[in-house]
Length: 200
Image 1 (spheres, one colour):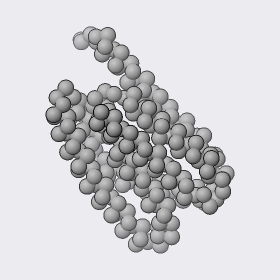
Image 2 (image 1 turned 30 degrees about the vertical axis):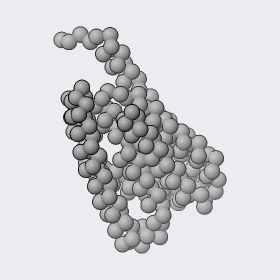
Image 3 (image 1 turned 180 degrees about the vertical axis):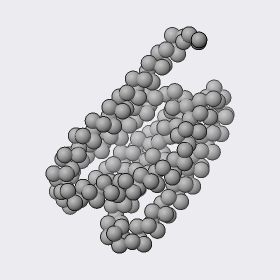
């Protein structure tokens, strides 16, 4: 049985705390915004947002293509080899970008082929911004490098931007378009910051 060094134990503890906080955020912040959105937008508009979010989530799964598992493993194995890490990162992001373009094309085909989707096409396209943010935020890289605290900080930024903006700007039913817009912007900002951190 391997005994952890002080540095390894400290890193393990930091990662555990970061993941715990991240999971807490994922449960607490939606509980804060959900009652407000239902009251402000109405049941029907909130249902539309939920359906659009669920629909777009499938394209997020397609864009991920299992890289959150395979790329995490590859990065973890080679994390001390800078050139190999760069090679893995570049390859995965290139493939994910092609999948992102394919997903966006597929979404447009679905949305504009059916009346149920086309009458609310703006909602679906704005919601797709969350997939862009997901693409920009390589969680698999931070997990492989065992730098979970960055995931927590950036997710906190993303969700706080979304939550604060909701309470400030969403005041009536007609503001339904702002909800997917703010959610997408929060993810895109966090994703862009994560790429900057990785570059540094």
